[in-house]
Length: 386
Image (cartoon, rainbow, N blue to C red; front, side):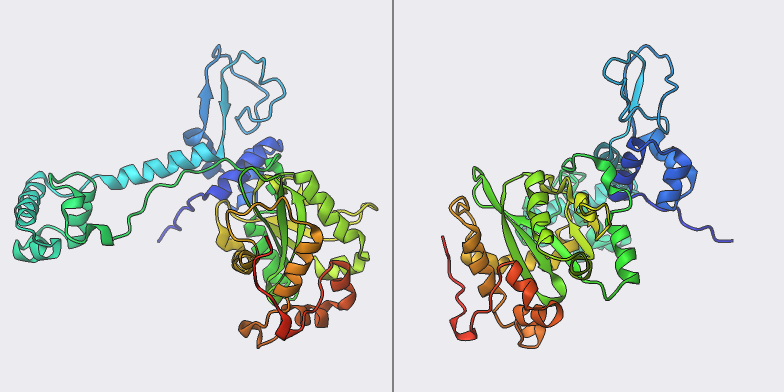
């Protein structure tokens, strides 16, 4: 009988584990949330957690065996164990790469390959020429020979190979800390949750959120709000890096609309894990305590999860080239910019404009309330405004 392959935890899964620990969930509840066996969670916490030294006295207040979020952690003298999704992902990744880094070839084979590559390189030969001429296929593939060289197992250096600079090499990317103030907001709002909802509600309008920045020292930025289905995007001037200001701006738009209109236009909202979206989930509930929409977060460090939003930013850069300060912008200038962008004919939309598509679907009243106007086709201007 063929056993089902054990699921490998992703960085998103590890974020949920950390969030659930902070939310007082036990191992059974965490396993149920991720759809895995309890032993998977137990093994993950045992192998990929870390310990801070103490007096070796066991703590009975731990959540799933971890001390994350414990109110007594600052002055507790006991040995403490913590779980951090970033460190756990790095540990797991390092183990996988280490296990694959050792060659299965015998020392005699490696020696023969090394001598052949060294002799061939000294004559200016390509690796493929060396591989064929010295019958190295008896030992391994050509790709394996190249890999041995890149890993430093052979005496020849990678830069000595022909065409070395024409190959793209993968470098290990640093995993940055998640910027959300409270990681618990991810529970029920991950990208997997988003995919489940959108698969069962295919007619719902999806709204993507992102931010555009100028110079590093700027105090202002632009919050972009995108309707991917219609290639439509508008923007709001915000205080750079201010999650409270982002919520204020979004709720300001919602305040201009009726609850039913919000439910129709903004049912599913997707943002990234940036600090400006720390309170993003707060837009779900209106002042009357009624749920008017749902919010979700993309996978960490995956701009492709909201690729449509990123692509439309290319048009914004026609007006706001990279490296330019945004501090002199006003909301009127931003509205004028997006009015031109949304009046720009799109081949992908059947030679229609995003403005006309949204007007047909949601009405001119909505467009008027967000400050977007129709510019005549022949008067559309896509030139820098700063």
